[in-house]
Image (cartoon, rainbow, N blue to C red; front, side, top):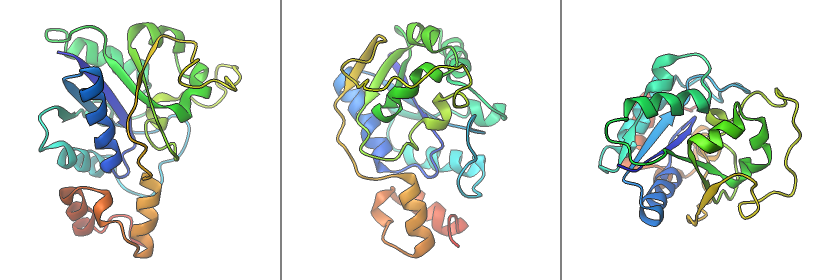
Length: 215
């Protein structure tokens, strides 16, 4: 089975995340996308006081009606700070009996410039198939899951680097550029704006029932 990972804070998960996962399946032939919510981001505080278990539950609800998608709770269950390297190693072992080829690692083009700062960046590029996606705005997709603390390894940003000239082996997915971000949804909820159709119905109901993100 060809498996890819899509991680992030998912605070909350929205239709843009699901559209990206669908694009990876359809255009690159992946059969399973694992959505991995972070526990504690390694380089910044989590926006809004929504628990990791709430974020995980919203991911479970969002992916429940698509057999290609699955919520992976390893980072939430592990707690503390997790880096991509650790999670990919764990998933390789967990799916060793059914995994075909390398695990795909999906992240947005807005994170390319800082790739050299990630923990074991070079080794990670060999262990996983890096999949570079379009990101119209907002770095909430996978930023916490992928990055080490900024500047921790003394490397400078790769300025001028894009999806085409990224210096590590990679694949490109031409996903639709959906102008939605988790931070925008949180703001709309807090301000009473229109956000109903930025998330699927089960996630909308969960947020409303538990009064998440409201001021």
